[in-house]
Length: 381
Ligand SMILES: Cc1ncc(COP(=O)(O)O)c(C=O)c1O
Image (tube, rainbow, N blue to C red):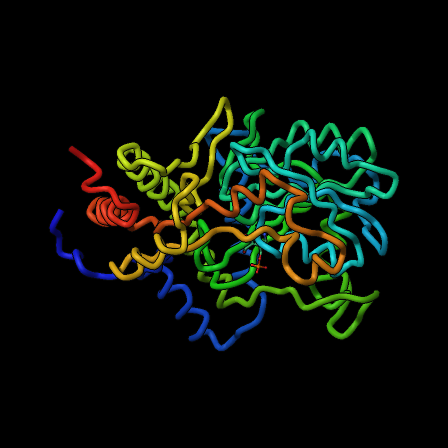
């Protein structure tokens, strides 16, 4: 197993930044303009092309179908939204900003995504929307959730932040349904702009509203310093967008590299006891690999495992804490024991180093060290 990087620490994530990123960002710096302009438009165009996707899966259909509710979702105080407790906290926080209440429902034990049966059981008079999260890049049960939304005339908001390129059980790219879908470009994501992300609206009305609100409440036909209502500054700078344009150009390559690393892990982890690897696909569903999160068996000491891995230069992290147990959600009355499947997943899951440039030697080393940390010898005969 000896290799040139044998003793180098292996981080959890690492973005793929190369000469093209440097070139495009430097162009913006040299241009003397740092506005949200041409690069933002180029990023939007490029992103839509890749997210729509040629090849596998029907992609995003922007503005071309009637939403279940004419105006799009307008959540307000007291509205309830069915969502997953097993997610990054942002997916619940966005509801709290609007005064809406996240109503958590338990998750499916295999996909770790919002369980449609639990969501159906939780739907009530105050339910105004459903917010599925495609956790760890695995597509949520979108056809079932879409049917539930249609039945009760609910808004459908897709959190596709971790799942750019994933395909659902009907062969549709994630982000293709609902009133809007969000994608995130933080540094560990499938593509990055450093921070920020992209919202894909489901129809022209939502698109116009988003354009207005991200720009301090200025509609497309309004002049500078003219405002039609309350808005925000959610513009992406051209510096960030230029980085994104370079990332979009090589997105297919980066997604394939992630698949390759995941396949190497799956093969090697088959030989490590008490470690369950995540599924890559089921029927037409395809994961877009974001993180590599394994489940440790009952009786293993996760914290001790993480500490032993750290001593050996391998980063690992307990992943993810359940959202409903954070202090600001406990204030709404949430407690331990309410979502046993999500809580069990949260208690046993462990993120291993995962990034497109991971070498076979690095994957080998992580698996060897994991086996050793769990008290097993070499993971292969
Ligand atoms: C599931 C999920 N939702 C939302 C977000 C967006 O969070 P942020 O706005 O901090 O990038 C992320 C991460 O980027 C995420 O993983």
